[in-house]
Image (tube, rainbow, N blue to C red; front, side, top):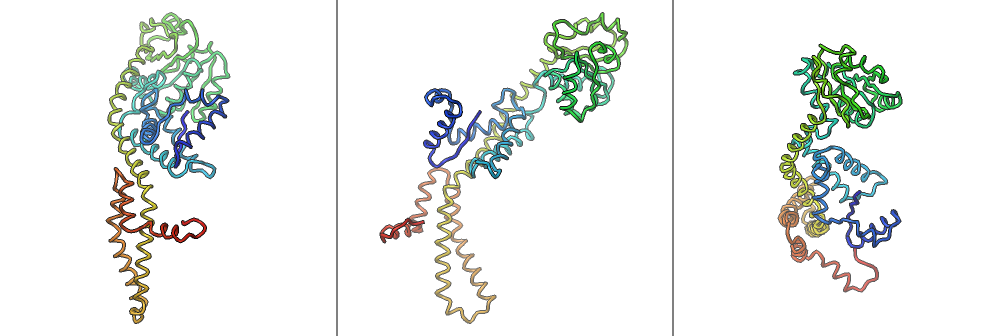
Length: 389
């Protein structure tokens, strides 16, 4: 897991976080520190943006991590959240960056797991092998374990709404039916398997067994010849004997075929990483610029307050000379004076905001130029009790 925090005193905050983790894990701080990898500043920002973009994932471009970053952001802005201004903005910007990468590049395109490759390959080959649109094909899956659940997820994302499940028992297929309420499942036990295969167009096998459950001999003995059937084996060990390719009308794909699809798509995603990094750099730069601007806010506020004091004082001095003006004319004078002040302030305020390097010197320069810390010095000289705001 990862911990993100922002604090005026990073060293003190790091000690506090480390102590909390030590207490939570029941490990001594000395032991914990050996296993903590720390990034700070722009390095921490860049890491999060790479994570949200899917570049640091085991499967490049996968979307689950982006969903997790988004959930962190949503929690950070809840009433009981603790994101604060900086971390909430960081998580929001990272989420936006992750979405942009996936919409403007192909980094999340193409199957990179065996189960998703099975769905992709059978969809792609349906017309060629069966002369049947994938959306109209009757689907069946042998087995109801983890691989089947992942496969059903990918099939559901393609809009499939009817699937037959063959399994040794009813429990797991029934659990699948509860997890995917939008799909209509036909559940059958293993002794009905060839009946289900006989009325299916595409059959996936993901059973946990040592010996093949489908072979040429079994297909022949059950009269499953002469009709187009596509078989996709995602089981390990293999669920389908290679000799089924000799059965008239049968087209079979195994894990080797699916692995080739995965390898091709993985290579494609690797190429997309370069373009994704360019987009992520842009988004990270936007955040860093915003964060950098925070240090200039107090000075800009002081500058505006001081200018408003001068403007108000000068208008007040001229008030006796303005007695003959109507209310509308007085409002015009107010607007005129504010406009002049705002135009005069535009230059120094833009100078502060746009300063990227040595921003501290720029802020100090503006403070000295306009005597912005003059009141604080007067307060100290006066010797009054209490602090100056």
